[in-house]
Length: 140
Image (cartoon, rainbow, N blue to C red; front, side, top):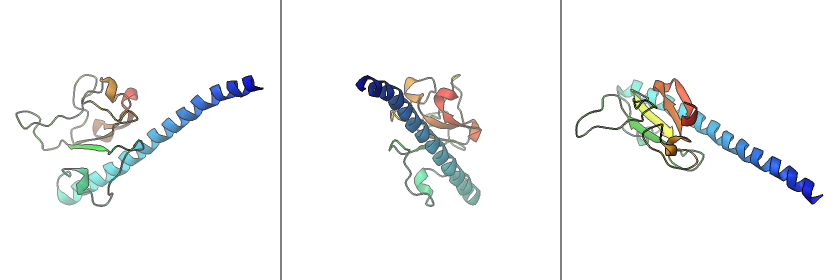
């Protein structure tokens, strides 16, 4: 009897943990899509993207499902070269993944690097291709 319970637990627990993780990924994707719409609305009303997420008074403070704040970087109109340059996220070929703004969550490990090839970036939930892709870096 104990062996049967152990076997069922060995099957059920990993599946449950995977389901919980996938649910958090879907929630993060939904959050990022909502924040993205607020950023675009802000840009339409103000003629430029916000400098930070705190400029979006309509959403308040939003954390990803793992408790970390979402990350945002205004790219459009910012310096990409020189001493005051900004560093946008980079794809596998080290090209910027967005030309307007970066918006992402750092995922379960709470760590991230600029390059998608970095191990710390693989669980990040990202907006890439100027909103054409939204999901895990590992699936990009």
